[in-house]
Structures are given as structure tokens and as C-alpha cells.
Length: 144
Image: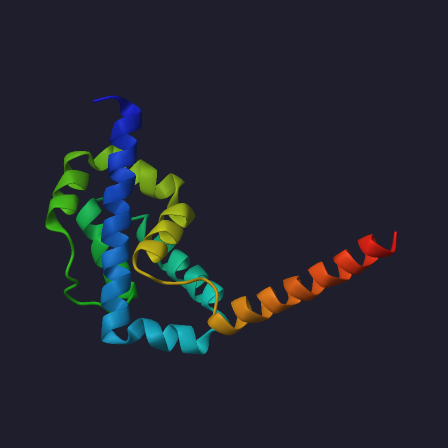
């Protein structure tokens, strides 16, 4: 198997595992408390990324997963065991990918878990503002 294909499969396995942790934390309510205590969902994503950053220093895949789950207040998360086994088969490469791409893995995992980085009110106000700016540009262009 070419190195590039292996890396992609390892990234996808990490994304599914991290997304499962995020979904479990959301389902159990521990993630909701974090979101409410942050000013934005983007800050909550930063919080998730920091928890994974703390966890990635562990020497083995099971210990990384355990530490990350504990940081999310999860005792027994429902995780895809086939992905964990796959990561353990390629432990060194999997840990390298996690350590090199931590932030990117969290972003993809959050998206897979259905965790949005923008609140609904921000996206609506942004659209209104952009619409207003476009009207101003149209007005200026039509006067020229």
C-alpha cells in the first residue's frame, strides 16, 4: 500500500474516532456546557483542539484515546473498534499523523460530528451585512 494512501486511511480513522468522541460528549451534555461557557462555537472548537493537543503526547493509541475521552468527561465512549485496531496496527504512523495534523483533524471531526463553527445568528447577520455591502457596491457602480 503506498504511503500516501495509508496516510489518508489513518487520517480518516482518526477523524471517525474523534468525531465519535465529540458526538458522545454532545449526547451526554458535557460539550453543551463548554459551548455555553464560551463566547462562540469557534472558541469551543479551540477548546476541543487543546484537549486533543494535551492527549497526543501519550505514547500509545489507546492512551491517547483514553486521555482525550477523559478530557471530554467521557468514561466509556462508543468508538469504532475497527478504526482503533487499524490505528494500532500502524501505531507509529498514526501517532505521527495525529501529532502533525491535530488542528485539521479536529476541524474535520467536528464537521463529521455535525458541530458547526458558526452560530446561526452570526451567519444570518453576516449574510445581511454582505447583502447590504453588495447593494452599496451596485449603487456606486451604477453612478459611474
